[in-house]
Length: 350
Image (cartoon, rainbow, N blue to C red):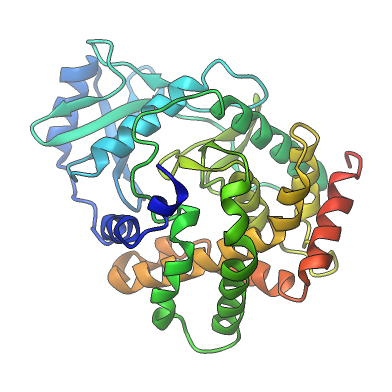
């Protein structure tokens, strides 16, 4: 699918409609039956927070803990096909860790039963990056691991990689339709500037970048510090997009220090570049992508918080971080942003 199709009105409408639906709840008795029928397992089941699908913690009698994902929404089938295939595809890769998909009794990656689909995976044990101490070394390791993940994903051809995903870069210009949900003030102004800059200077060059399968949501809630290394979870927004997209997203989340040009994201960027060198064009576009992704997060989450006020606290968990990061990056000109990136990728490990 060419970029023109993934940036079309039809793609945006389908993607936004999917996120405008509230996940349907599943009864515990049904979940127990699904575990027994498809996996021959039993255990206690606890509901976890989730935006678009139903996610559960499964504690088996032997102490093992698994994650069960289910949904009765039509679009979930494509999403679960992608997620389960992506996790399986990177399972043997080195330099990072990720959950392992538990196959059904029939050897399938996922199950379908009477309008419900889903899959079962192992649970990573560690500390989510948003709860860990973000030292320069941890951020460097995170960037290196993310590059390793992208290298592994680049080798894969996955089902449903072209399904509508609102977080896809092709949707970003149309996200300004959600501007009316933002509180009036400085953040709304910064979002407008960042998105205008993206449309004018970044989007025209997007098609020229290397494209591949990406995670597309390496947030501090989806990256973990484990005893085995940096781990990545929740591939639900993964899709076919520019390779540098994962770096832009991860880096955008760790912009915290106003005394540094890139707010501390320098260390994560350096770690990524130590494994995968950035092209000149990627380096020149990175800060613009970071600011646009921060703006996209703000726009989408204020919109969804308006749709689902009862879940607003969970939906907006990353918004304050994005607002702070956008405020820090906003003074950078395009030239200064590129210079800061080039300085970061030429630095040594902290």
